[in-house]
Image (cartoon, rainbow, N blue to C red; front, side):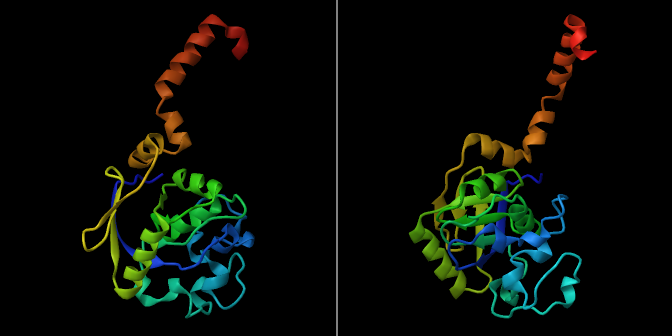
Length: 212
C-alpha cells in the first residue's frame, strides 16, 4: 500500500449525493482481484456513452462530454470532492481500488458509507469528512476557479485552500499511523514477523505435537 503524507492536488467536484459503489465501479468489472486496472472503468456508466464490459478498449469508447471527469480542466485530478453518503450500496472493495487506480488519493465529503469509508483506509485512499457548509464552499471555489487545488497534510490533519484557509479533519491514531507508513493489514502483520517467528520456535520447542 502506498504511504500518504502530504498532497497538493487538483480538485474534481462530483456534485452528486448518495453515489453508490455500483456507480463507482459497475458489477461487471468485479471479476478481477488484482487491485489494479480498474481506473479506466471508474464511473463507467456515467463516463462513457456506450455499455462497458471487461476487455473492451476504453481508448476508443465514446466519452460522455457532460460528465465531470471528462472535462479537460479536471484531467489529472487527485482530490475528489463529493456530497453526502458517498460510497453507499454494496461492500465491494473494488470501489476504492478504482478510485486509487484512476489517480485519486483523497475523497472529501460531508459523510461516507461505513464500509466504503473503512475500505479506503485499507487501500491507501484518504477519506476526509468535513462539514456540509465547508464542502459547499469548496464546491463553489473549485467550480469558479480552473486549476483549483487543495493541500492535504495528514500529519497535521488539515486541508488548506489556495487562499490559505485551513480546515481540520478527524482520523484515528491507528488509521493515521497506517496511512503515514503505507501499512495495510498484511503490512501490519509482517511488521511483527520477528515476534511471530520467535513465538513459533518457542511453541515448536515446548509443544512439538501441535505442529506435527
